Length: 209
Image 1 (cartoon, rainbow, N blue to C red):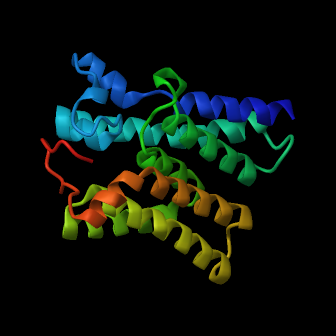
Image 2 (cartoon, rainbow, N blue to C red; image 1 turned 90 degrees about the vertical axis):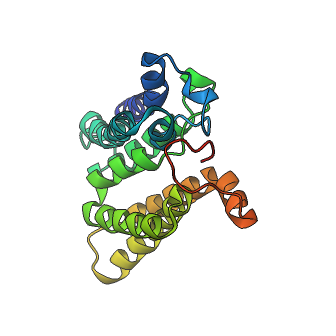
Image 3 (cartoon, rainbow, N blue to C red; image 1 turned 120 degrees about the vertical axis):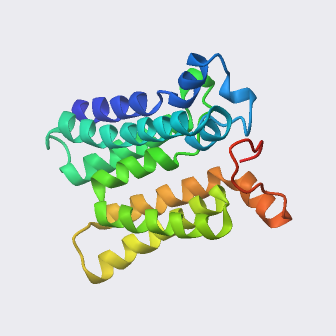
């Protein structure tokens, strides 16, 4: 029992590292006060430039991947199987990013961190949702809409794989559904702007996200 508790705490603390905020501070900018005021990679990209935005995305994705790896390593099959331990690691890594205690439990939207966790858990599904993201973004230039569609695709593809190809557990389908719902919920303000026609398309110097 203690091993899984240590695993989820470690995953949460790892996920809570506010990379976007730290990158901004290194450049003398509080990322929470510029652009969309979000600490995620998109706002870093828009306000601090492409190289730092890419760096932020990679670091946030790495958090997700490491959260899964650490949870499986720490649990070591003692309490639950590696599949479920990895899911717990992913969930708490994403929650750490979205609700980081270092910034008053306000964080990013979890897209990059979720992608990193999914690369470890379901690689081929991750490739598919990245393709969905790329297609929607290239057509609409809305980062938010691409992220919402990719999140929905995650839940759908996980269910399709379980019902057709197999190879994943119902726990994994449940995780995919919860992760997708959380990501979409974190975009609720974007959804409102999309419906109102006021959402900004992607440009580096845009002030909305």
